[in-house]
Length: 361
Image (cartoon, rainbow, N blue to C red; front, top):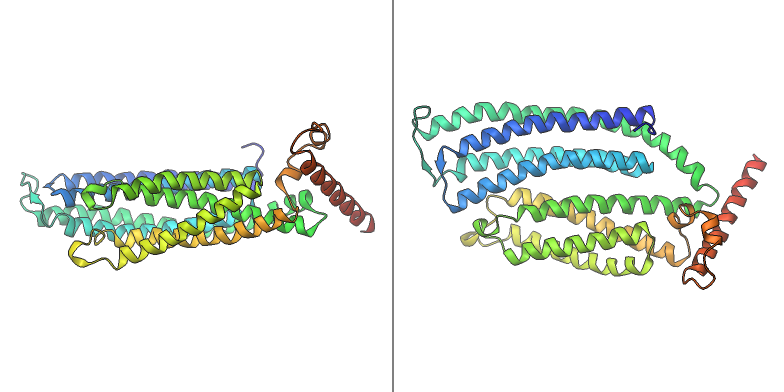
């Protein structure tokens, strides 16, 4: 952390602070959730709603853990694009919190509608249970919403300040050729999109864990987990190591993913009412599907742009993250020699252009 600037340290400390505060408040919400459900004997479907609701709580806390990781990664790699994504992600978390509030109301009303109430000395009927727990849950939930809203403004301001700081550092490193700077921005955007894809695809798949109780397809759940992880690993390798043919293969996989998401959106929202397993989770699942669709579509566009740059011989990470000596000393019989020689030549050309500009100025 000592390598970060003062602005970076303040931003990271603030994001960690947000995680701690929200985690404490959300833990209280979970506690009251469990207490509330404990007053009923739920049927299988009601138990499924309760489990899904608990999963939503955990996903909500995970969003703030993910924000901390995004912030650390952005500061280490001086990725200004990721700072913008961090602000957008925080706003998406706010929207998720609003939808989650609606999900709690569904659990309180319809999730316990067919459940058997357990009378006790504390609560004589189900109406008193609902009044008691609503009086404790709602203030916590509204406090969380207000806190995230306020923090989003602060985070946007800090991201703006840090963006200017990082832009200058990156300009000094990647100056000389405007094509390289544009390629760097494109790769940075794609890397950031992949990280957000990882979270939202993972979060969507986790929601399908109580498949049998909610009537979801178990096979579909397993396929999403396996293929989702494989696709994202391929994406990361393709971008971080600038492997254009791996990226091309990944582009084809992304197209298939988009087709699946479109199919799923129609299936979730146009499902026959007689066997509608999504009637209690439709809004939040649609939120994740729509968000994932937008992110995956953007990933497809930037993947194509990056592939086009690589086919033109425009590389960024391998040129600037490799030591010139290592490239020069590579074996003449190495399969990568020609490729690295082109990159070394390109790098020296860019450095020469940069030097000329400094002399002129």
